[in-house]
Length: 203
Length: 256
Ligand SMILES: NC(=O)c1ccc[n+]([C@@H]2O[C@H](COP(=O)([O-])OP(=O)(O)OC[C@H]3O[C@@H](n4cnc5c(N)ncnc54)[C@H](OP(=O)(O)O)[C@@H]3O)[C@@H](O)[C@H]2O)c1
Image (cartoon, rainbow over all chains, first blue to last red; front, side):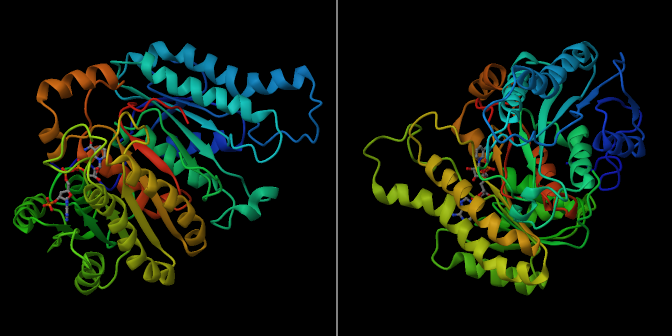
């Protein structure tokens, strides 16, 4: 195996175009991390896009104590966590399919129901759908993966995190960069938890 | 690739062929000092020369038969002596079936043969992990990476139960060692070009398999798995633990 150019020193992402969809601190940090690697980050559909990253604006778990949830609340979360990423992906697919080493990365939350919440169904929908589009992309040089982020500092669940701390932005951006790079070329349809060991089940 | 692995010390089992060999190539190029372990030391030595010629760090090849009693502690002691400590353990030795076993495990497959596969694919890797853990915990840094298999039992197979055992055992373990900065993760390969894969399937079968069952349309290379192992071994992946991550081109069927 020959040495690759810059092996050990760079992610080799310079000059690529990435569309990052999301309007929160995490989305801004991801965009900044990509820019530092020389990626041109845009926040709309672009014919040059080969990397698509979707980050729902409100990833914090919806707090409810009763089963009495309005239909509106159900559909809002389904739209924000599943329908929006799905539609954005659909819109960006033509440009991604036309490029080499296409990368689609969805940020998702836990779907292990530790209590009642409207969010689990929506995350589950996103995960099942994202896995299924890998089959529709048969024959294209494009991978679809999910990063399942843990809880951040200050979250009530934090005391249950085996690693003993909340999730830092760099925990996520490091994996984003790895997944964007050519070094992840055979990882497809994976859900990778970045949660300090919080989840109870392995996947 | 950008990961801070230079100067780290690793044991890689199954390093003479396939996945373990690919992991070693990636690690050596990233500046990791490796103990490479397998039964065929001559292959380890030949390969070591190639990797050094490409600019990789010289490994310490160690001959060990993991079927022998006491093999895990022997390997750990040898590595401890050669490297002065172990920061990373990659368990890549294993197999989907014994070379002379039938492709399809029969109902009447003898118990001692089931036990042999359980030993190689689970027991040894657990023993090695427990051998390296105390010093990793004391140093507040450690990485264990197990190469397992897909958790999708297509048919009766001697490999599935031990691989599933690794997944369950390491998830539990991950919770108790996380506070010490030690992570344990599993990589589950789909079809990666390796010695056993080439021995067990014909070229035509593999091509058809790639086209029909793998969304990326091809088999993977050992290095493609090695890059993920390198990422997981790095400090940059310190918040990922207790995970099972497929490197399979999209082959497995279940979403989650
Ligand atoms: N390749 C795939 O697509 C695939 C799919 C699913 C799971 N896996 C798993 O991935 C791991 C690596 O498989 P591979 O495909 O890379 O296999 P491989 O090419 O056949 O290599 C197996 C390695 O394990 C070593 N080994 C086997 N038995 C040993 C023993 N008793 N003592 C010491 N070393 C031993 C072999 O070295 P010596 O013969 O020199 O001792 C060799 O280096 C296995 O656990 C396998 O089950 C692989």
